[in-house]
Image (cartoon, rainbow over all chains, first blue to last red; front, side, top):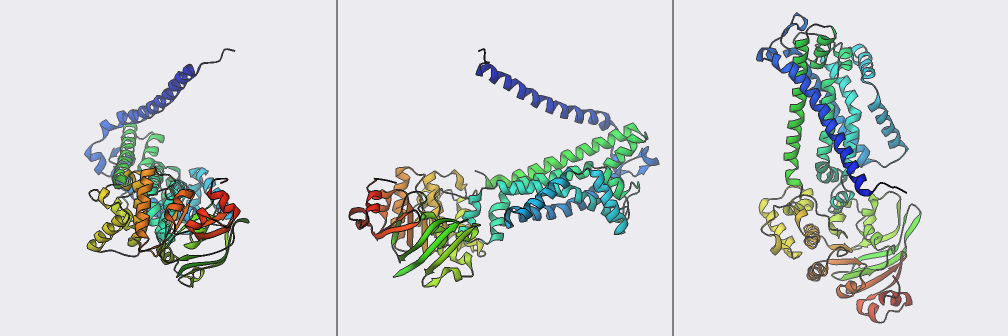
Length: 280
Length: 249
């Protein structure tokens, strides 16, 4: 029987895995490079600081930047505390049972729901029923509902990854349940939890469907949370889809990508600093 | 004087019996060795004494445990009970923080400490666990970097820092080399002056070296408890004799 020798298999495995990694990174670099190449040359100080003029053909994107920041702020400000609290409840304050299984099943279903459904939900609940209208508040709340399952899931996994022995030690030293969570579990789950929050920020920034449904797409500078506003993603979508200005669309996309990069890099730097004294 | 009186203690986990109507007393300032093969209920016994067993779902406890004549089931502040009855686990589990933070973890749960009293506490606890000389210059470095034997003595120091009345050891040397074991044992013998200790071990020779008295448990039942010398020379029960002479277990 001519079996392939382990050495050949090893080499094949190495080549395949390397290939997969290079392909993935290559695709990522290509996409980012493509957008940056098309957009960076149009980015000027004026582009970042001027109002949107002539539906986006001229002027800058300051209102979209402000709209994005406010909406993400509302979304994460609501979803992060709520999601982390829920995950602490699921991982630390209750036992596995029919109830938790049902909750977890629900969360997983929600995580798989297309964002446009959240858009519709937000439109009906926040915009119409609660009367918030097309506004940053409605948009932020709808985005919060959309990213909540992701935050709960990643936080719960992070909490469960903390060794049970840390909890035993803390409890044996006289820690109450809450102290066990805050002193000996949360500090070590923080990087994982933060990853979930960053994923949530990313999804909120890039989302279009939900925002169009719930926050509208006003080009004016928002002055309160009850104003309609567009995010950079929506602005980009409208510019490109309606053929208003390809250059402006690319420039917006470039700013969007840079924003996500900056958020990711600063979040991971912060995390690294936080964890420095805690690891061996 | 009885520090702890256990009366008719039975424990089951999800219907499976772990301890069968066990009764024994622990005297003040003694080291009681508890020996027995795996699944004999030694660790379960320890779990009951500081009510860590409350944290295990499906565990049922019957019977009475008196600490200084007070029923521990009736103690409302279970955290206070756990500070009075400290435990050192089989595997050293330093929390991933500095040596100093490890020692102060327990005391700080009750509230802030003044720097001077914190310093004193760290030094006293580490000295009591015979670790001070080895770590005094690197209190701010990570506890995880210590060797296994040092980590276990750190865990002992961490328990001492709570100023407990009783310290329970759950096979504290199972993962240590003979030299580290000797150091831990040395620390234990010194601690006897101030604390009542219960020492669970798989290692009968260690039990013989350390314990004033020794209890032998088998499949959840107390077979015999007596002076350590008696248990290891003229035990009254055949099963005890077989176990300590290495005929089974």
